[in-house]
Image 1: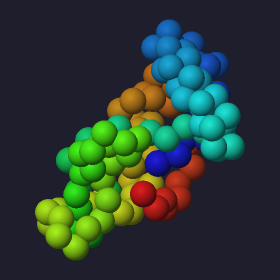
Image 2 (image 1 turned 180 degrees about the vertical axis):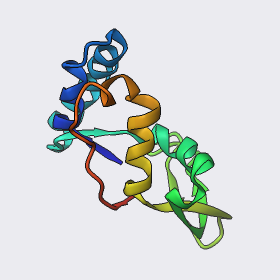
Image 3 (image 1 turned 30 degrees about the vertical axis):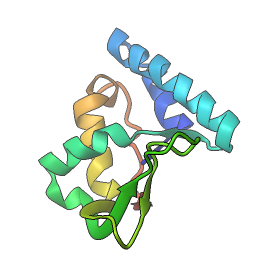
Image 4 (image 1 turned 45 degrees about the vertical axis):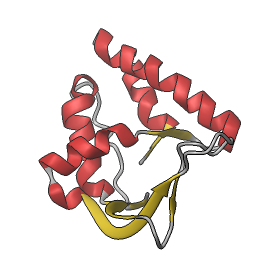
Amino acid sequence: MVLAEHETTRLQHAGAPQARWINDALRFYIEFHKQQEGLDGCIVNDVLPIAALVKPAALTFEEQQLVVDLDEADHRGHTRIDPHGARVKVATRVDVALVRPLLSERVFRWAVHQTATPIVSQEAVV
């Protein structure tokens, strides 16, 4: 899930030190993704497993067969689809309309009460 730069900026203007701390932490990732991928924001996938526990409908899963590359090359540790791989369920879609409010209420709660600007909702592909 991508959190746009303008969505984190409102944390910077919140009165609570925790909100500013979260903003500062996300700034590093925003700059990284901007330089590496030209992305206006940062990817916040870490919240998705928690969102799936709280709201199981937040993620859509597909069954796939995957392997993990174990050789010593640059792609060591990468997962890839392979017809002989282990059958696993992989999250392929995020219902951002369910996840963004959770992010606002649970993680950005200091900023939510400081501003009337909600985090926008849309669907994303993982």
